[in-house]
Amino acid sequence: MLEGRGLHLAYGATEVLHGVDVTVRPGRIVGVIGPNGSGKSTLLRVLAGVQLPSAGEVRVDGRPVRRGRELARRLAAVFQSESVPFPFTVRELVTLGRFPHAPAGLGWQHLDHAAVDRVLRQLELTELAERRFDELSGGEQKRVLLARALAQEPEFLLLDEPTAALDLHHQVALLEVLSELRATRNLGLVAVLHDLNLVAQFCDEVVLLDHGRVRSVGTPAEVLVYPVLKEVFGVELYIGVNELTGTLHVHPMRRHPVPNS
Amino acid sequence: MGRYGWAFAVGIILALVAAALAMLAGTTGLGLPGPEVAALRALRLAASALVGASLAVVGTAFQTLLRNALADPYILGVSGGAALGGTLALAAGLPAWVLPLGPLVLELDATFLGAFVGGLASILFLFGLALRGRGAMLHPWALLLVGFALNAFCSALVLCVRALVETQKTQEILYWLVGTLSDTRLTAPNLALFGLTFILGGGYLLSQAKALGVLALGDDAARSLGLRPERARLALFAAASLVVALSVSLAGMVGFVGILVPQAVRLSFGADLRYVLPLSALYGAVFLALADTATRLLFLAFATELPVGLVSALIGAPIFVWILRREVRDA
Image 1 (cartoon, each protein chain N blue to C red):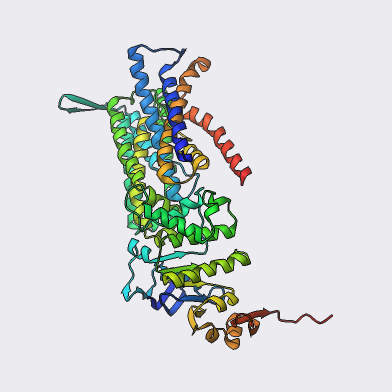
Image 2 (tube, each protein chain N blue to C red):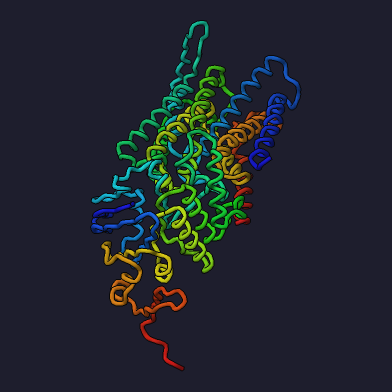
């Protein structure tokens, strides 16, 4: 279990997280939602251990996390703005995800190559394997970075806006892959998402952040409710039920309806 | 054979051609040398290959650590310190340091030693500052800025020294600073010391190729892959800086090899540092050996031997622009 307890974080005088509690169980997908600047990405960075909280603690299975390879074998993350300044090929880049598992020295083991091949297949990247990362489209690059994180074979995966820049097919395909991993490998997943309809379809739990505080937490049906979303996002909404999937359907509306012509 | 295999094969063939040319080329044209001249040319070939290889390897490391393809081995100010130390020793006309080691007598040139001490002092200054800042100063942009300031400061002092000494010394200092392989520092002990440092420093960098690759992805990604970037960078920077200090001590500041070669290797073959580092060494050695041969052949045209740093820049700059243009067009 991955837990954040009483997480506080301040950048100078600005406090970004005010005592946030989060729990991620294995085999669950937790969606983190909230307006811009509500602390979603910061929460993810703190949970991933790349940023230390000014107060509070992150624990894995009850033990406080210590940065290092051991943690990286259990927990992987892809952040929002990752750039790769050199012409790595897709395979080279995904292989770097094996770093926490790899022995010292120059070579990678058979196990590493097998893991990379598997992940490339899962994310439909095999055909792009020898292409240069910087020559790929934004969506393809996103999938490659996700592949790198999956190559770590983590128990917990933290993703910041994994579906941004993806077309509809790849948004759903990516979330299907993650759902499958959750089922087959008992992967615990935290994803910062903006698309509340994807949240409603794919997440087991939702954490709604507002000004660095947890506004509400629970199942999509418990969190995606009209008055709360309207207040937090400051926009008029239509919330209904998708008859085909039975999941909630959230639709933002413009302030002044278009007059019938 | 994969693309890296081809890269090594082509590099080795080029190295053999460059070595043959370097042995045959003299200031009067191509021809078989006598034994004494052959020994001198072999020493110079070894020096050019070593300097070229080390600058390209350090260039690769610095570019990766700073995540900037335009970083060169001199960017952190280590060269500034080395240049200042060497200039001071040259200006003062210090004698060589003779070190008897049993039956062997090591004679280390004063400029060489001065530059090495200057380079070491800059490394200590830079990393002392970085460590006191608890790693914050090891952030790439902070290091770049401090390196820039250090280089500017040392350059100003070098100019002061040049203004104060007699004309002949000024000329000597200028030649050394531009990067030259044709002088008294080219002795077997100096080369041996440099070679050893290169093997140790370069070997360490190569042993950390995977970590370097992870650092190239940025600090957040590196941390989530289990690396502590501040700590990892410190040792890598120190090893690379030591090699630069020695390289400046031996040959002054030879430009362009350190930027051009890693860039060309990456763009032509790929970015896996387990291959880019040794390939940079190979192609760096070939490039500078050819440039040094060119300095001798150009003697026929100019009736003087141009410093290798100058030729390196003359050949390197157009190739660099050509590669860059090709890249921009492809992108």
